[in-house]
Image (tube, rainbow, N blue to C red; front, top):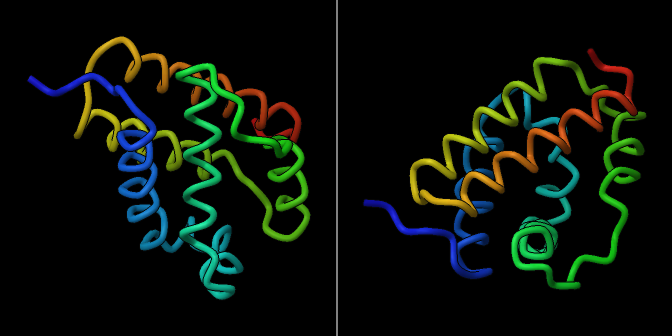
Length: 125
């Protein structure tokens, strides 16, 4: 039986393994080329881990506007419906590979909600 997500360390594992998939996908890499080129991937992974830690464990580590970041990126690299499908598929697969339980399901549910709101804001249906 797989463990439940129980810490920020678990979240960081999910995010790191998730990005391992994103960064080798030719359809997804354009969204992250600037992060890789500027050698700030590790910082980015920490920021995203903070974001999910806040969601799952009700902490207050993340201070950015996640929606604005993605809307701003959309100006330079256009999000399409397929990007959201790929993103959620990799995210869910990564969570399911390492964890099970209520928090794992909560993470997937919140990811679905976030993706839905982003698609609506960016008019990507």
